[in-house]
Image (cartoon, rainbow, N blue to C red):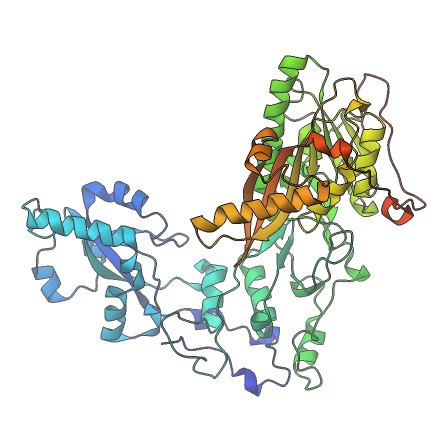
Length: 560
């Protein structure tokens, strides 16, 4: 069964897009009570069972998960007389995986008792084991198995306590896996997945909506805005792919500041704009001040223009992980070499998510593990914010040198000027592996140490459907890298993989069939035999105003 909708049918709307004014009132989200699946458990094992079932236990802000039996007010008489022990048993509320809230009366109870959550292997095993123990004589005091399925009726949360996902599930017609329905009660097509996740950058919430969700985009924007005030001031939606060389994309405003509500209502009421893709309030120059955000990440502060530079808050964990890995490696290296600092080259450095925490004077490793970072980005606006963030985080000019060059030109510059880098970071997932061709003809003799640098390349790749596919996909990713280097087999073949310490690590889940990877390896020495890539003017991007900083000779740190 599919939930009823508080919205009028899409077919009755002039533009096939719900206007912001169609957002239901809070009363539409509230009902008297809902029935949830639950487990009867022994009170003494409450913490243990909660921990085991942590992914399946009911989670809602300011709501309990465990109830004494007196608080479950919806028992059948025969259940109560059948051996409940209020003093020694509890009800643990489980997450509903089926559409229990779409039923009523006995049907609702039946749906809760047979919810798909009880088919989870962990719960099935727990219930089965308890039943076996009961049959062998090890029973609960009331003669029943210690763990058994049940249900509980809870008062519905007020609108103020509902999450974005819960609100959107009441508004949007979500498809139930077990239902053969193609539409809800008002005829609207069912949506495969509720798009309740969003990225946050400062006061900006960013979503990337699929085509099927676009008719609801202004309602979704309002839900995100209302549930995240006052932190979120504007909600934007990506309306194009990252196709330019600066990794930015066009956006439209869905809610909050910058949205002309009167204009949107007028457009939604017009029959001239029937395609949600064409009904847009695009982020433009007039929104420049609104797109200026400030955020914190792992002890560092960053300022940026969200519309003009690349920033992805979902890479926060990767930023922290790789920084820690490089700092740990640098610490070991400096203990052996006794050099003044370890050098890192950040080829596509953006506004500094790697370079700033590596070199900030506020970092805990600043004195114990000195790191000098050469950070580069092609986007002049990113370069501007890299400078600003360096000052904001006390990254002195003898620790952080900044460039505004093409990535390949920057790699050539590092080699030609004898920069003895231990690590190269290449965080451009869409095309970073192809930039590895800039290492062709690498001169390992350009520095006195003849160091072999470690390369960290981020890229997208296929998601494995099972363990058997993991090896094949990792090999494909490594082959993509070695093709760009001009060194077949140097990373993907067992001997080359071991020699060059090639590793493939999943960074994050990007989509149903897509992962982001980080490939780390020692630069194969065979690249020195490959013909060096000749850069033409367009590759070097030697435009007027292109900048590079020279490393100061003074040992005294100065604000950059």
